[in-house]
Length: 228
Ligand code: GRF
Image (tube, rainbow, N blue to C red; front, top):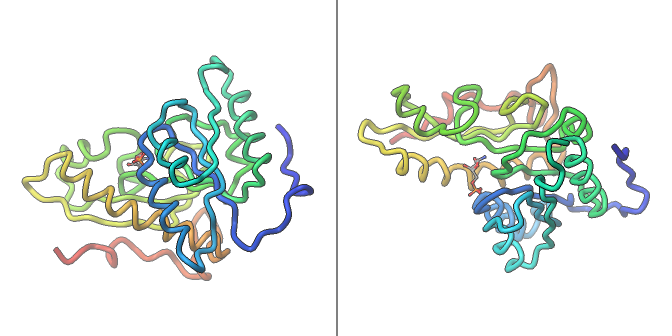
């Protein structure tokens, strides 16, 4: 895989972010919106999808953001080649940080290593609980009292990696999957831009597998539980 070369990328004050999507892209839209704010330390320079007709691509284009498609199907089972192709697109756009936002492909350890501590993911559960799919259904089945979303740095293991920020919602006894998902999604749209801001400002470090923000521990979940 090409080693990152910044020789043709001039240093920018705002970090150049690529958002990787496979679907509707509501988190992507939240990041685009947040990045419009004056003083926000990152700009969305590229939206990249593995699916040519992902709904989020149209949203990105309408927002004037450059888009690219690397179709995983054309690489067959060769995940490394697919990741290399994505990496090349990211390099060509002088990308500093990558945000996975509903990007439904497993990434190779080589790719995650190249973007170590520069690639974020959002997961719709309070990690390390409920990794994988169908998180809201599983939280309801487990009769969880709290649920939420997590922004973390990406490591080779799926839905693992140092936690940057979590947002919590209370689970109601009469909740449906759809209602819970909608409340969690609202939280996602708040914490993803907030977490990206911290990373882009260089305020997040990783020590012994845990994130520190300005040198302090990430707030524990107890302090995040909503009043109602
Ligand atoms: C979100 O729930 C996110 O947490 C998960 O995939 C979903 C993507 O939704 N990783 P959207 O495409 O951002 O609307």
